[in-house]
Image 1 (cartoon, rainbow, N blue to C red):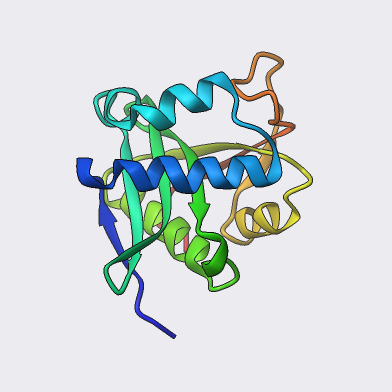
Image 2: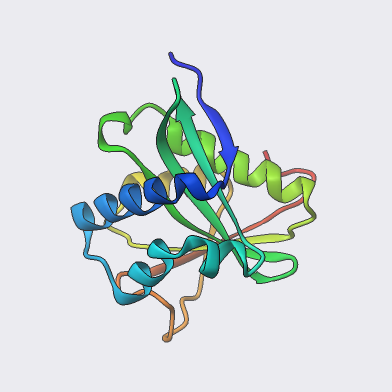
Length: 159
């Protein structure tokens, strides 16, 4: 198995953040106006707001991405996780998720939230495997496709 490196956001990788997420959204749903805004300007809507973006890199090629969008100092939304179609099934999503959990511990983030859709059974399974629990979904959640909300309380026992 090829070595996956998880690297932080750099402006030069913005196009991959956009392309990977857009491809994923178009394959499973559609690109909502909120998605287009955030994906086309990640520096403005994620990084400058106190959030983080990470990329999975194999052999100098960006093959996946994920964002942590700041809600408050100790709570972030796990968002915009996408892996290139030809790399799906290679546990890259696992590596990105584990990196976000480790990063959260190191940076005193207490809770990760996420919105997903129940038809994404593999994603829901992955989140549950890492300890995310379903919580009530607010009516005014930011995504039309979101029909499940989950949270992970980060503590010393989180894997």
